[in-house]
Length: 111
Image (cartoon, rainbow, N blue to C red; front, side):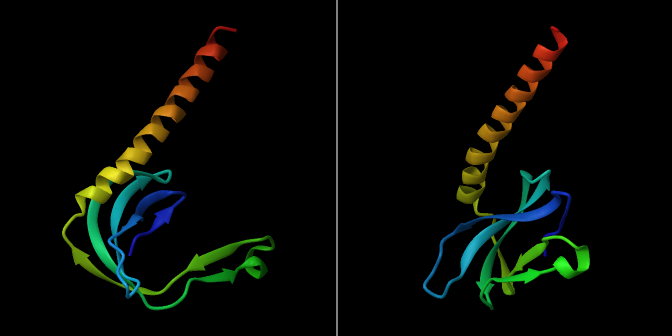
């Protein structure tokens, strides 16, 4: 099961090859601040329950919710089309964020 702490750890990205039973293939990634870096494995996911939202406000004293779903997973070969699709989205986003940061830093250093 993937796990992140402050957006860093492992996480599933993507949903490909859906079938009539509601299963699909997803890929587990190493992520840094929520950005997928390295694909680890692909899995066929079998949802066992509907998605549920749980209110944790009584523990934290503020609006905190957790969305979860129980599912069964089975390993499958790494789905390279899904890996390429995730990179096709992630790389331009990282480039734009990097460009914005560099632009802001260069403007600050010229003052």
